[in-house]
Figure (cartoon, rainbow, N blue to C red):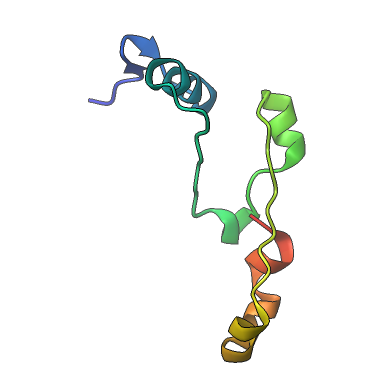
Length: 83
């Protein structure tokens, strides 16, 4: 079955998992990638604040050389709204 513990500590939420990873493994940063961006545009700053999580919105900008080859990247959802 699925367990919600790691090293004997609760990791049932993303926040608790990150805390355990930092404490037990000495990690300084933990990155979370998700594929839900295209559906609901990621996690909002407001939601992060309400959960006690620092959310950073990133808006990538394709290079002019890449836009020459793939011009539709200029209006790609990730480019317009961030991750």
